[in-house]
Image 1 (cartoon, rainbow, N blue to C red):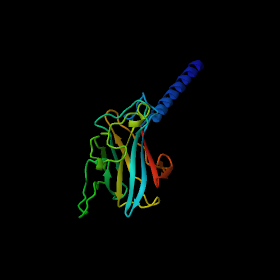
Image 2: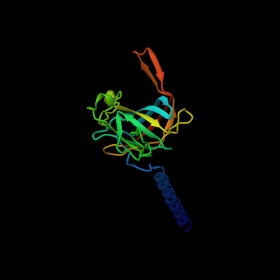
Image 3: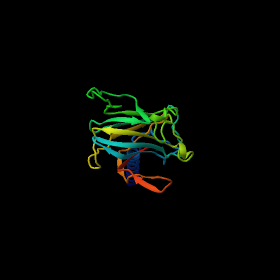
Image 4: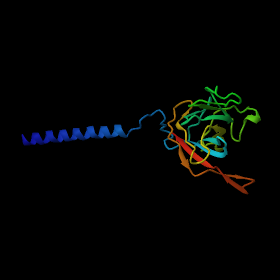
Length: 219
């Protein structure tokens, strides 16, 4: 009987360990597999905001989306970038457009391009008039991977944000960043302030830097 009891106890211990192991595996699994790509588990898409100038009621920033994944491209109809403002910011835009303007009725003279609290941005096509372009914009939302074609792995646009902070201490970073594209979805982290981006010009003889930069990583 003692031997039977010992075997029974061992069986119970094994069963208990199996249950605990299953629980650990369940809890350690990703919350969603929608954005997981088994062929490219370590790549990411980085969205960088660089404030390049201040205005009386806000700032001008260049937003750059770079595809650092090794194999997964973004194909037509291209990316859709969204976020939520933390205050009541409004914006003008060059090199991309918001799909909805929102309620700008309180602006009687010059209405902003977008007044929505949660704007969604899309890229412009390659044939966009020159006066509506900025450097590295207008690729119809299509991005190659940095590994395959670095020259076509990034796309930029510029926004002028009003009713916003006017210094590094008063700017409030957007939240709930989303990136949508054909195929599997992406999961984006929160915006994190990083070392300001540096730019070279005049053939590398002059270097300037952004007043403030932050990154968002999507996988």
